[in-house]
Length: 627
View 1 (cartoon, rainbow, N blue to C red):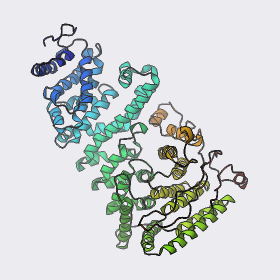
View 2 (spheres, helix red, strand yellow):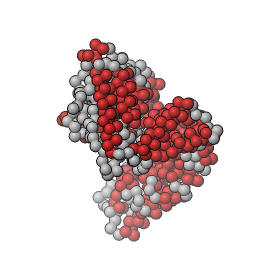
View 3 (cartoon, helix red, strand yellow):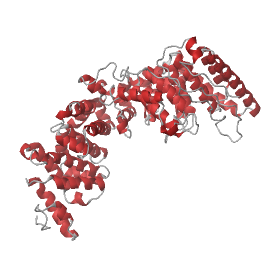
View 4 (cartoon, rainbow, N blue to C red):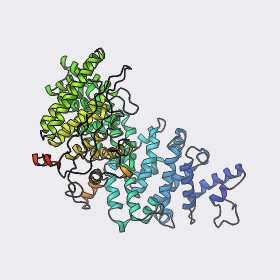
């Protein structure tokens, strides 16, 4: 290639070529550059590759370089790095396979025609070699990303599927990626490869920045592996390979961590599997996976609806319904009054419809359901019937019902103040039975207060159930601060760190946005008790925790799991005011709850409170009555 600039020390410099003003000459020079680059052994080759990487990231839909042979060039460079260690270790060539695979992935993530060009250019075989781990986990990360994009399109998926080892390699990588990054990079600071550190931080960070970026990249490595597997999961012929117990049981825990919150991760793959009849059987038979789905369905996770979809499909399938119904019904019953979840409208109505089908199927002898599950379903169906009846009731009668519910609730508050926690819980149950179904705000308060009773009575499952019902009734859904905090504590009691962490973070966010001076965080200060719980759960849900325990980096006892005891609810109890029923057909009745928020006393454990503790207010916060 002819030298374009006399000032440039590199013959045929790519950057000089790009300055060529004549479009025809520039295209011819770029075409020649792509053809000749893999054959050259000159120093400074990483500079144009880095420039191409920046271009691919900034303009992934620009067809110019695709037409001029960039895919053939990148594939050849990866092969050269795999086959020629002398060249790879010279100068800064060690970076080139990473950049080359990243460029392929960037140019194929949006445009199917670009993906077709990449396949024709022969990029799959060298990417598969990187996926095998022929170099390091850093190159695996960009290889699985590129292969995942290629597998997304109908026209290029067959080429990916023809390489049978890709699916198996992706499954193994999804299960082992966190351990690989921890043991090969994170654990031993002094043994970190310098080019890995430079790629992670672009040469701008120290050890702490490298560690944080390693967590992010490890999360991406796992999530991109799951994305690639998900492409195979849409094809029933690959489900037997995917639906093995060893892999399925680990899927719910593959959530990507807070650093990758935009990825549906393991639950997204489970949803794809459960959408197909062939996949539902293995999921229903897999120990523990239904419990995990129920926990995600109740949680405030952004992908909550995916778990709900899985549970509904499992119930609707006669081959799996009898295996899961007794575990699934309690979770779905708690969610039966949810209205809208993201883009999903009338989700609660869909849940009730499926539960009703379960009762009807049992009547026809097609399914077996326990008396407890049947009772829970019938209670929800009766509640729906109550709502219909109330629509035809005179307004005055509904006022009477709400006033009666308020009286009973105040009796519950009084019992709580005297230390009779179980008695207070019974009164809140009685008030819920009296309270009109349309009084959503009042029912939110009743469920939330009863959830606190269950916490103090050492009944975390019941507390989660009531807090979830309150969060479903609240508008917007999953945004009632006090219920989030109470459920965070209940999850903590059960050792469900991820779920507790998500609720605690949402609780803090809600406090910061509240107009209530007792709820809002003055000067953006996070309550001490919430901060402690978040720190504890972040340690317990740390992305590398399992790998660190396995490799001796973290003690399994006392390192974040038991360092801090579960925190209590530091809020005053809620007392929603009596309100009127509107005539405009709105669902809500009642004003916003007007309880106080007191951060003065923090309980150190979940032991059942003694009368002495209650009288002195050390373990619980008593309700402040409103006129």
